[in-house]
Length: 235
Image (cartoon, rainbow, N blue to C red):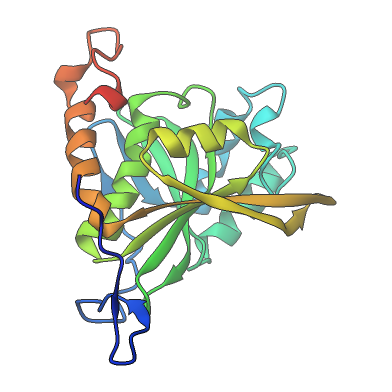
């Protein structure tokens, strides 16, 4: 395989980055619903609070809250307060996740939105147990990627997590993100340190990944019980 060209040389013989094509800044993401075969992402609203509270109540150990900045919700007041704040936030831009049966099963967001350079991050991901490791969970992430790359023309899609969060790191790798390294003592939350693991997908990598996602997510890849016939990494 030929080496990928990552830079050129200026008149002084110094290595410099390749020219960037396209018009910048790119558009800011409109906060609109995103629909797929298995899942729909809708702008988070206070009216979603009760359903989200019920979804997360399935996690009786609260393990899903460990790496989130918020503590587990204690009741409807906490859920409503979160959804009110999310409803009024442009960055992070929160989406409520609804499965193909119309059941609300989690939320996610786009954040650190930088139209000037075409970079955007997915984060604040919280899936109810019933959503985890399902086609709907994968498609929720794919819908955001397609929105960023295909609809908005962004150059970079980021995933960051606590470096100790092994499930999140595994999910990023499965989805085709490239691990870029660890920022030590990058931040702190819940009174503890966080080293942050960085991952990304670039626009030059997106087409090949999107072909794989289309094949894997197609309804023909799942049997009547919803079991996959081919793994994503085999598509």
